[in-house]
Length: 87
Image (cartoon, rainbow, N blue to C red):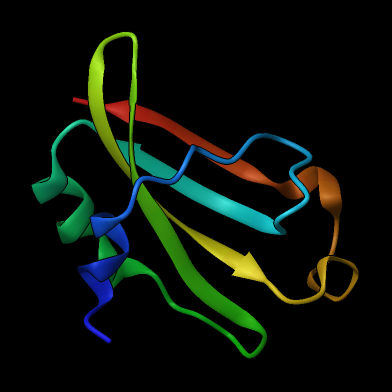
């Protein structure tokens, strides 16, 4: 699968303490920024790339993140990291 295919679907942004085990994500106002960010993500065993597109009160955005299979094995639940939308 081509990595940027994750942006083809409407998927809400994760929230802190989410039940989907998404531990790290970035949101972007331009899809080009999201695509440029993809190569910087390095996955370990039990991790996979997730993301999508959505909108907020300012307009469209695209996000990309990492989902872990086992949150306990991954580590500290408080270490979940979210990066704000950049322009």
